[in-house]
Length: 111
Length: 117
Image (cartoon, rainbow over the protein chains, first blue to last red):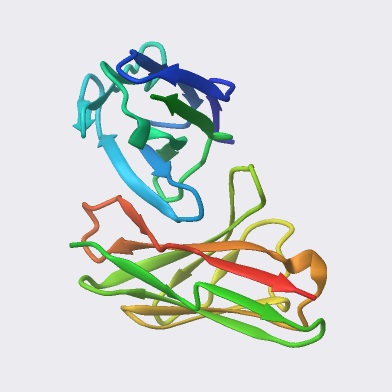
């Protein structure tokens, strides 16, 4: 079945540091790929997505590129802010529209 | 756009009672809604998929008689936790997918925190 491996957290960074959260997946076919973010006590918000190989999803300074050859969708941001502190989930989508979630990566950004 | 609401946002109930949670897509029609459960500091576990006008499809290990799902319209799905027990305490999150087949994105509700005493 489909599975997702995310970088183990928690990740602790200082403000303005560079962020990378690794994500690799196994899935049949060519799934769409998503990053969701969850702030404390809240549901998930779509952060960005990519629907085909070599697509780059971007939003709020975050980027991720769909790498078919390495089955990866690593999340990056050049300069994190305290407000980016949250849990980040990588998730491929199957042909039935189901999402398979990684375990989530907790990010804490200090001033 | 693409806003999903849940009600209530939190609920405390006594063991043995039933609790209903509503999930609504506010500004779009959703052919499919999903129900997830999330334990503290863990990932989301898909419980079931519901399609408007048909029976829900439950994931392996999820008791369909325990977690009743009704998708009565293109904007509303409900999850009823029947005869709730303390082990059912959790964070329940729904998501909705738009009517268009080309739109795969799931939009999530804010979640409902259930505490069973």
